Length: 253
Ligand code: ZN
Ligand code: FE
Image 1 (tube, helix red, strand yellow):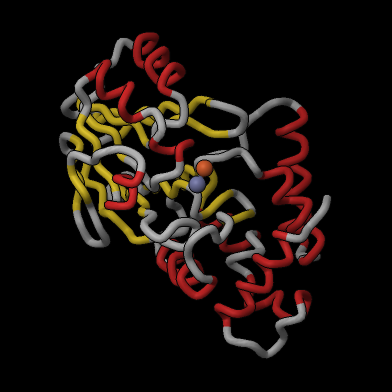
Image 2: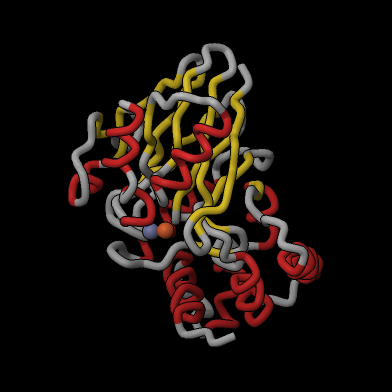
Protein backbone atom coordinates (compact mmCIF):
# COMPACT_ATOMS: atom_id res chain seq x y z
CA UNK A 1 0.00 0.00 0.00
CA UNK A 2 2.55 2.58 -1.07
CA UNK A 3 2.22 6.22 -0.21
CA UNK A 4 3.85 8.66 -2.61
CA UNK A 5 5.31 11.80 -1.01
CA UNK A 6 6.11 14.78 -3.19
CA UNK A 7 8.22 17.38 -1.33
CA UNK A 8 9.03 20.89 -2.54
CA UNK A 9 10.37 24.12 -1.02
CA UNK A 10 7.88 26.88 -0.13
CA UNK A 11 8.22 30.41 1.26
CA UNK A 12 11.68 31.08 2.70
CA UNK A 13 12.48 27.78 4.40
CA UNK A 14 9.26 25.72 4.61
CA UNK A 15 8.62 22.46 2.80
CA UNK A 16 5.33 21.65 1.11
CA UNK A 17 4.25 17.99 0.99
CA UNK A 18 1.70 16.51 -1.39
CA UNK A 19 0.91 12.85 -0.78
CA UNK A 20 -1.04 10.22 -2.67
CA UNK A 21 -2.37 6.83 -1.62
CA UNK A 22 -1.43 4.80 -4.68
CA UNK A 23 -4.10 2.13 -4.10
CA UNK A 24 -6.95 4.61 -4.54
CA UNK A 25 -5.41 7.82 -5.93
CA UNK A 26 -6.62 9.81 -2.90
CA UNK A 27 -4.44 12.84 -2.21
CA UNK A 28 -3.67 15.24 0.60
CA UNK A 29 -1.35 18.10 1.41
CA UNK A 30 0.40 18.39 4.73
CA UNK A 31 -0.03 21.99 5.93
CA UNK A 32 -0.57 24.93 3.61
CA UNK A 33 2.47 27.24 3.78
CA UNK A 34 1.87 28.82 0.37
CA UNK A 35 -1.43 28.31 -1.48
CA UNK A 36 -0.05 29.52 -4.80
CA UNK A 37 2.93 27.16 -4.74
CA UNK A 38 0.81 24.19 -3.64
CA UNK A 39 -1.85 24.79 -6.30
CA UNK A 40 0.89 25.11 -8.95
CA UNK A 41 2.42 21.78 -7.87
CA UNK A 42 -0.98 20.09 -7.96
CA UNK A 43 -1.48 21.36 -11.48
CA UNK A 44 1.99 20.24 -12.55
CA UNK A 45 1.38 16.74 -11.11
CA UNK A 46 -2.15 16.72 -12.53
CA UNK A 47 -3.53 15.77 -9.09
CA UNK A 48 -6.81 16.79 -7.47
CA UNK A 49 -6.82 17.34 -3.71
CA UNK A 50 -9.06 15.46 -1.26
CA UNK A 51 -7.68 16.53 2.13
CA UNK A 52 -5.54 19.08 3.92
CA UNK A 53 -3.85 17.70 7.04
CA UNK A 54 -2.79 20.54 9.35
CA UNK A 55 -0.19 19.95 12.07
CA UNK A 56 -0.80 23.26 13.89
CA UNK A 57 -2.36 26.68 13.53
CA UNK A 58 0.64 28.86 12.61
CA UNK A 59 0.07 30.86 9.41
CA UNK A 60 2.98 29.13 7.63
CA UNK A 61 1.10 25.84 8.23
CA UNK A 62 -2.61 26.70 7.88
CA UNK A 63 -2.56 30.11 6.20
CA UNK A 64 -3.24 28.66 2.75
CA UNK A 65 -6.21 26.50 3.78
CA UNK A 66 -9.00 28.81 2.61
CA UNK A 67 -7.56 29.48 -0.83
CA UNK A 68 -6.70 25.83 -1.44
CA UNK A 69 -10.11 24.63 -0.25
CA UNK A 70 -11.85 27.17 -2.49
CA UNK A 71 -9.82 25.98 -5.47
CA UNK A 72 -9.99 22.21 -4.89
CA UNK A 73 -12.87 21.41 -2.52
CA UNK A 74 -10.45 19.58 -0.19
CA UNK A 75 -11.63 18.88 3.37
CA UNK A 76 -9.39 20.04 6.21
CA UNK A 77 -8.31 17.92 9.17
CA UNK A 78 -6.39 19.26 12.16
CA UNK A 79 -6.20 20.01 15.87
CA UNK A 80 -8.86 22.39 17.25
CA UNK A 81 -6.38 25.26 17.70
CA UNK A 82 -6.24 25.59 13.88
CA UNK A 83 -9.69 27.16 14.24
CA UNK A 84 -7.97 30.24 15.70
CA UNK A 85 -7.00 30.88 12.08
CA UNK A 86 -9.51 29.10 9.86
CA UNK A 87 -12.48 26.69 10.30
CA UNK A 88 -11.60 22.98 10.30
CA UNK A 89 -13.87 20.33 8.72
CA UNK A 90 -12.69 17.56 11.04
CA UNK A 91 -11.04 18.31 14.38
CA UNK A 92 -8.70 15.53 15.52
CA UNK A 93 -6.83 14.74 18.71
CA UNK A 94 -4.37 12.17 20.06
CA UNK A 95 -5.33 8.60 19.18
CA UNK A 96 -7.66 9.46 16.30
CA UNK A 97 -7.21 7.80 12.92
CA UNK A 98 -7.30 9.60 9.59
CA UNK A 99 -7.81 7.58 6.42
CA UNK A 100 -6.50 8.59 3.02
CA UNK A 101 -7.81 5.82 0.78
CA UNK A 102 -6.13 2.69 2.15
CA UNK A 103 -3.46 4.63 4.01
CA UNK A 104 -4.16 5.08 7.70
CA UNK A 105 -2.60 7.86 9.76
CA UNK A 106 -2.50 7.77 13.51
CA UNK A 107 -2.81 11.20 15.14
CA UNK A 108 -0.12 11.69 17.79
CA UNK A 109 -0.25 14.65 20.18
CA UNK A 110 3.06 16.47 19.83
CA UNK A 111 2.22 19.74 21.59
CA UNK A 112 4.86 22.13 22.90
CA UNK A 113 5.72 24.37 19.94
CA UNK A 114 2.01 25.26 20.06
CA UNK A 115 -0.49 23.75 22.51
CA UNK A 116 -2.41 21.78 19.92
CA UNK A 117 0.19 20.36 17.56
CA UNK A 118 -0.22 16.92 16.03
CA UNK A 119 1.91 14.47 14.07
CA UNK A 120 0.37 12.30 11.35
CA UNK A 121 1.97 8.83 11.49
CA UNK A 122 1.50 6.11 8.89
CA UNK A 123 2.87 2.93 10.49
CA UNK A 124 2.49 0.70 7.41
CA UNK A 125 4.71 2.96 5.31
CA UNK A 126 6.85 4.07 8.29
CA UNK A 127 6.28 7.75 7.55
CA UNK A 128 5.67 10.62 10.00
CA UNK A 129 4.75 14.24 9.26
CA UNK A 130 5.93 16.06 12.36
CA UNK A 131 5.32 19.73 11.50
CA UNK A 132 7.38 22.01 13.74
CA UNK A 133 7.89 19.52 16.60
CA UNK A 134 11.04 17.71 15.47
CA UNK A 135 13.53 19.06 12.95
CA UNK A 136 16.65 17.47 11.51
CA UNK A 137 19.11 18.06 14.39
CA UNK A 138 16.58 20.39 16.02
CA UNK A 139 13.14 20.86 17.53
CA UNK A 140 10.50 23.57 17.48
CA UNK A 141 10.66 26.62 19.71
CA UNK A 142 8.41 26.58 22.77
CA UNK A 143 5.93 29.29 21.80
CA UNK A 144 2.95 28.02 23.84
CA UNK A 145 3.87 24.81 25.63
CA UNK A 146 6.34 23.96 28.39
CA UNK A 147 9.63 22.09 28.20
CA UNK A 148 7.94 19.20 30.02
CA UNK A 149 5.20 19.02 27.38
CA UNK A 150 7.65 19.20 24.46
CA UNK A 151 9.88 16.56 26.05
CA UNK A 152 6.86 14.23 26.33
CA UNK A 153 6.03 14.91 22.68
CA UNK A 154 9.60 14.15 21.60
CA UNK A 155 9.51 10.94 23.67
CA UNK A 156 6.37 9.86 21.78
CA UNK A 157 8.21 10.39 18.48
CA UNK A 158 11.32 8.60 19.80
CA UNK A 159 9.15 5.55 20.44
CA UNK A 160 8.48 5.21 16.70
CA UNK A 161 10.68 2.69 14.84
CA UNK A 162 14.18 3.89 13.91
CA UNK A 163 13.44 3.34 10.21
CA UNK A 164 10.55 5.85 10.29
CA UNK A 165 10.99 8.54 7.63
CA UNK A 166 10.47 11.91 9.31
CA UNK A 167 9.19 14.82 7.24
CA UNK A 168 9.91 18.09 9.06
CA UNK A 169 8.28 21.33 7.95
CA UNK A 170 11.39 23.51 7.69
CA UNK A 171 14.93 23.42 6.30
CA UNK A 172 16.74 24.61 9.44
CA UNK A 173 19.35 21.86 9.51
CA UNK A 174 22.58 23.80 8.86
CA UNK A 175 21.89 26.26 11.68
CA UNK A 176 20.73 23.40 13.92
CA UNK A 177 24.00 21.58 13.15
CA UNK A 178 26.08 24.61 14.19
CA UNK A 179 24.28 24.70 17.54
CA UNK A 180 24.50 20.91 17.99
CA UNK A 181 28.30 21.02 17.53
CA UNK A 182 28.49 23.67 20.27
CA UNK A 183 27.00 21.34 22.90
CA UNK A 184 28.00 17.87 21.69
CA UNK A 185 31.29 16.44 20.40
CA UNK A 186 29.91 13.04 19.45
CA UNK A 187 31.67 11.65 16.33
CA UNK A 188 28.38 10.58 14.70
CA UNK A 189 27.14 14.17 15.01
CA UNK A 190 30.37 15.56 13.57
CA UNK A 191 30.11 13.25 10.55
CA UNK A 192 26.48 14.15 10.02
CA UNK A 193 27.14 17.88 10.34
CA UNK A 194 29.74 17.67 7.56
CA UNK A 195 27.17 15.95 5.32
CA UNK A 196 24.59 18.62 6.16
CA UNK A 197 26.92 21.52 5.34
CA UNK A 198 27.91 19.84 2.05
CA UNK A 199 24.27 19.22 1.11
CA UNK A 200 23.25 22.79 1.81
CA UNK A 201 26.20 24.23 -0.08
CA UNK A 202 25.04 22.20 -3.06
CA UNK A 203 21.43 23.29 -2.54
CA UNK A 204 20.21 19.79 -1.63
CA UNK A 205 17.49 19.29 1.00
CA UNK A 206 18.35 17.61 4.31
CA UNK A 207 14.70 16.66 4.86
CA UNK A 208 13.41 13.98 5.25
CA UNK A 209 15.42 12.44 8.05
CA UNK A 210 14.85 9.23 10.03
CA UNK A 211 13.99 8.62 13.65
CA UNK A 212 17.11 6.48 14.07
CA UNK A 213 19.41 9.24 12.80
CA UNK A 214 17.74 11.82 15.03
CA UNK A 215 17.96 9.61 18.12
CA UNK A 216 21.68 9.16 17.44
CA UNK A 217 22.60 12.79 16.72
CA UNK A 218 19.84 15.31 17.60
CA UNK A 219 20.96 17.26 20.70
CA UNK A 220 17.36 17.73 21.88
CA UNK A 221 16.71 13.98 21.92
CA UNK A 222 20.13 13.48 23.52
CA UNK A 223 19.45 16.16 26.16
CA UNK A 224 19.82 13.85 29.19
CA UNK A 225 23.37 13.02 28.04
CA UNK A 226 24.23 16.66 27.40
CA UNK A 227 22.78 18.03 30.65
CA UNK A 228 26.13 18.88 32.20
CA UNK A 229 27.15 20.79 29.06
CA UNK A 230 24.19 23.15 29.44
CA UNK A 231 24.35 23.61 33.21
CA UNK A 232 21.65 21.07 34.05
CA UNK A 233 23.78 18.18 35.36
CA UNK A 234 21.82 15.80 37.60
CA UNK A 235 18.45 17.37 36.74
CA UNK A 236 15.42 15.40 35.46
CA UNK A 237 15.35 14.66 31.72
CA UNK A 238 12.67 17.24 30.88
CA UNK A 239 14.68 19.95 32.65
CA UNK A 240 17.83 18.91 30.81
CA UNK A 241 15.82 19.21 27.59
CA UNK A 242 14.58 22.66 28.67
CA UNK A 243 18.18 23.74 29.28
CA UNK A 244 19.26 22.58 25.80
CA UNK A 245 16.27 24.41 24.29
CA UNK A 246 17.14 27.59 26.21
CA UNK A 247 20.77 27.33 25.07
CA UNK A 248 19.59 27.10 21.45
CA UNK A 249 17.28 30.10 21.89
CA UNK A 250 20.28 32.16 22.99
CA UNK A 251 22.74 30.69 20.47
CA UNK A 252 24.37 33.08 18.04
CA UNK A 253 26.14 31.20 15.32
ZN1 ZN B 1 5.09 26.70 13.70
FE1 FE C 1 6.56 26.63 10.86
